[in-house]
Image (cartoon, rainbow, N blue to C red; front, side):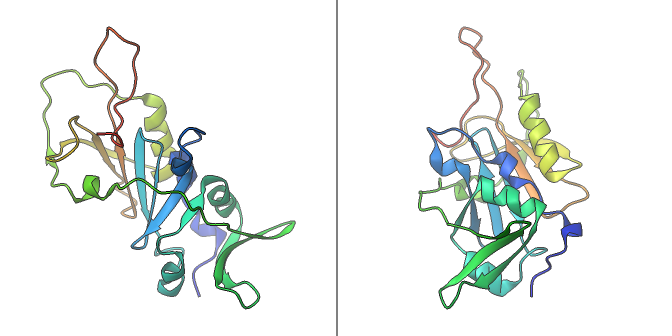
Length: 195
């Protein structure tokens, strides 16, 4: 049985998922290899799930997409994977009003493995790099204390992302993409999903 105590405080990973209706797939959190991944195309956060689910439950959740609203329910209530009256096992949240079952998403989540499989090296930028303080604050709410390092990747990422580790939580890691340096147009984010 997985650990279901509210004292474990499931990370509010839904804060990293998109609320943009034009990008519906980014409103979900992907479960893959025991890791939950959420992105809004400006930040990307990964969370290891072993503290909240056992191996059998992670097998049930493998490859599934959980909507950001359902994840938010999970941060405030007890949850577990259970059989839904003879059907396939389901993720369920126990609220004051009763059980709420997760309807997994069918959207196509972006392929982000290239970002995590890169060999990152510490970068010492000679030019100005700017990051959104709002997105940085969002990451802080998700993973807590942070250690920030600028890394340069070798593959599809043309910009220098900020890789964020938590010195007190080795279950979480994040990427923050820099903002544009082109001052002839309004500031916008570099989007690592369309490179």
